[in-house]
Length: 298
Image 1 (cartoon, helix red, strand yellow):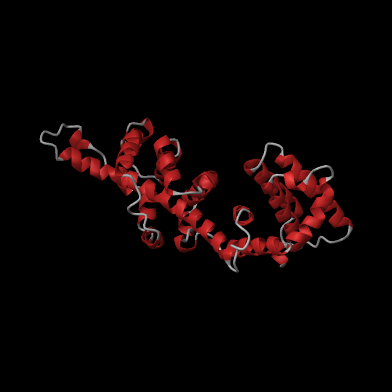
Image 2 (image 1 turned 120 degrees about the vertical axis):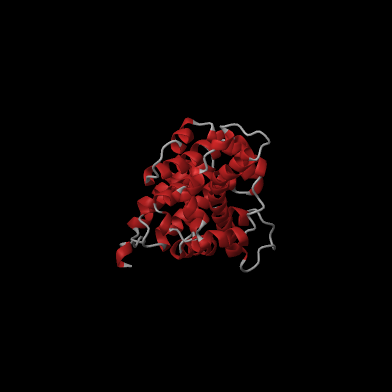
């Protein structure tokens, strides 16, 4: 959707062969970069415990408290899993992320974490159960990082599309925490999803005029030129999924584009897109133009 919108706003004549897929790759790459950087931020905050412990211990007159700073979090199972993943390290080097964190911000985030009852309970509990290790890292992400205005501003400064991807990142982080061993950092987006994205993008571009022939009669008193550009793109995408993506159920298509319209367009867009796509679907079904198959039988 974002790629199609970007293409719509480009000056005529500036779109060359390959521009669409290049834009798509750029956007997907940035999503992978944001995910990698969020995990790196978790690692950096956790590792700051060692810096804090060393700094306090090296004071001229360290207190008993200074000498008892816990570094337990640096050996956290999930932090260790992230930092020792070779693919993760390759991504950090490839995307030059090791210079990106703001050390002062990392220090502040660590101090916020260290002051919480959850963290104090964690470091004072001798065991390292998988549940407690996971709970602490999830707490660090949900209650410290993404609730901190300075960190959110940092993400906006570093990543142009952070606002679009922020909600999805919560889902990806949760998926990682549940099954970290299944993540391949060198291919965070599966080949199947990449092919689907590319195919949908090129299909919408290729079938645009045909889709508009189906959409415009349903607009009734609406002026197509005054309808939100995102709504038109979403309807074009929906029609393409109806007709050219046989393994995607029509109900799934409609529900997905309603959600996208609500999230990215006007308050009325969800209902509007739903109504138009539903009307088009009824006509296509009457004309026996919808041919869906079970994914397992593909």
